[in-house]
Image (cartoon, rainbow, N blue to C red; front, top):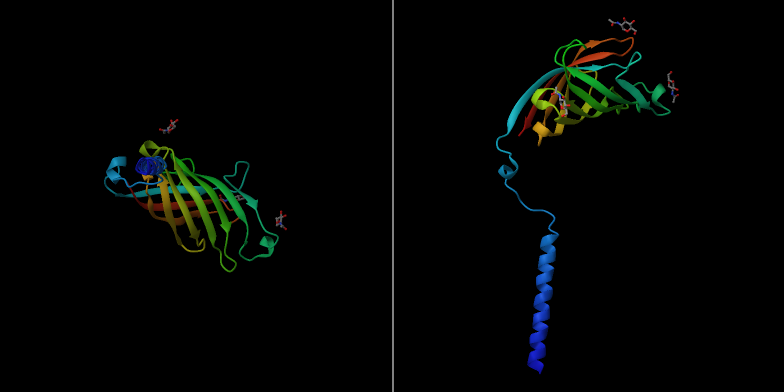
Length: 191
Ligand SMILES: *[C@@H]1O[C@H](CO)[C@@H](O)[C@H](O)[C@H]1NC(C)=O
Ligand SMILES: *[C@@H]1O[C@H](CO)[C@@H](O)[C@H](O)[C@H]1NC(C)=O
Ligand SMILES: *[C@@H]1O[C@H](CO)[C@@H](O)[C@H](O)[C@H]1NC(C)=O
């Protein structure tokens, strides 16, 4: 009698343990994959060259101020001003040259003592093999420097696993209305 009860208990415990193991397998949270199983083979270094047009003026602005602080107007560095933009990226310096994509995001005056912007944006490409792919930038833009370096922190589509940097150089600035054309050289590692 005692032996059969013991056997019975043993079976119940075995079943409980098995179901626990099965449950933990069906709820598995992470597992290791080989990069090849998702088609990632060889890392590439790409160089992109384009012009960005930031147009705050006129009837069809591409950049609009969406927020500011009470102190922004008295701040020598416009601290707190926040601008949302959807700027065209073109192959040549003319605004009418072939459209490659858009730079969409925000820049905010984030430095109390110098002109310095926080940039949080995506390049959204619309041309050729890059159509639909994006690159993400999260960086400081030291706007008064002749060349500004910004970090690329990720990407999608052709730019999966992207990392790299962008170099920005002002090509044209209208100091009256703020319209700016910027030349970009982007260096990006991706798969
Ligand atoms: C800052 O100045 C602009 C333009 O002169 C004005 O429209 C805005 O109301 C001012 N903002 C504050 C918070 O005083
Ligand atoms: C880019 O992709 C979109 C959506 O798939 C498509 O409608 C558009 O025609 C494509 N543009 C070019 C230039 O290939
Ligand atoms: C700069 O902007 C002002 C004001 O909108 C305009 O009158 C002027 O023609 C612009 N200058 C250039 C070189 O585009």
